[in-house]
Image 1 (cartoon, rainbow, N blue to C red):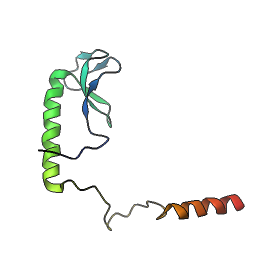
Image 2 (cartoon, helix red, strand yellow; image 1 turned 180 degrees about the horizontal axis):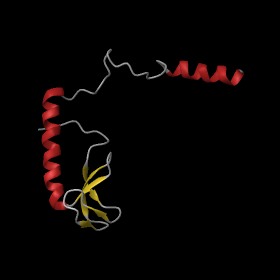
Image 3 (cartoon, one colour; image 1 turned 180 degrees about the vertical axis):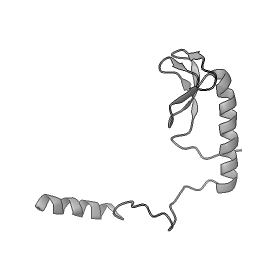
Image 4 (tube, rainbow, N blue to C red; image 1 turned 90 degrees about the vertical axis):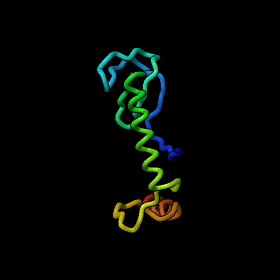
Amino acid sequence: MPHNHFIGDPSWTQAPTSVDCRGCGEKIEKGDAVFFYPRTGSSFCSNCGQEEATRFHLEADAEYAVTGPEEYEPDDSDDRDYGPENEDEIYDDQLEDEDA
């Protein structure tokens, strides 16, 4: 089943340096295949990575089945401040600061 892909999603890559596998603790040499989580920096060797990749894709597929292909948009209950509504307001604020 397809699922949404996000920047922080884990993926297979090559280890840029020697690291320890987060799953089994074995040494992963530079250049070896790893399943890498960019947000946490966790690396899994090829054996542990197979299990991690399967688990991740099952969870991502289940999420996609519920949310669909739509992009996330904050709803009205999201009370975080995202700043000015448009770039003109940002630019006007910068001009006022320069004039002061």
